[in-house]
Length: 202
Image 1: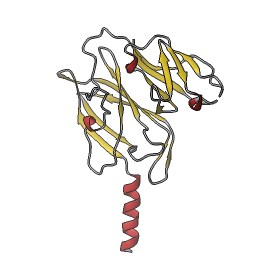
Image 2: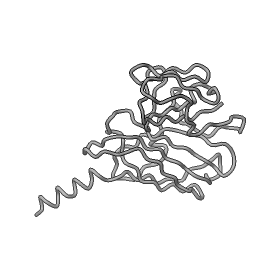
Image 3: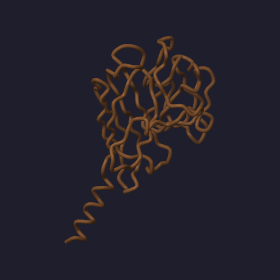
Image 4: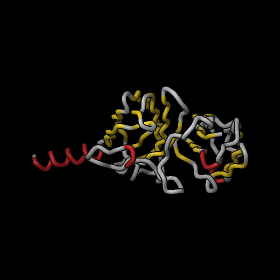
């Protein structure tokens, strides 16, 4: 009996979601608005298949209480959650999360992926930028076409977050960006039924 209970507890632990509990701020004031979390297609270490998802959370007084499936050991590797922030006033922004397996609640700063400069993503200092959120690149998704157009050219180009079925594509490895034109490498040609979404500043 003890063995059965132990196995049950291990199975529950393997299926447990990671709790995210934090209070976040926009500048010096608690964040007020909405957070949208886009989850990728992935298979967990325990063998469960997770399909892409979209969850919305209303944030009041900066209080974040979100439970997410860990993706630090998921397959395919390098899957990310794309997290969009929509404050009640001011511009929106996006960032990427890797959610580790944890029995203890985690803070938002423990999930953010560092930028190439080694800093955490943060809200823009002034509303001088405009943002494109969940834009669908223009072009036929037919298994042959590799060239897609954005409505605007990302500025800076590194602000582009391009996802395919929830998986973040890597610029220079999976695709090339020139102006507002996205060209996928041949091995990453979008197939029929794929969903392409883009977030960027311009």
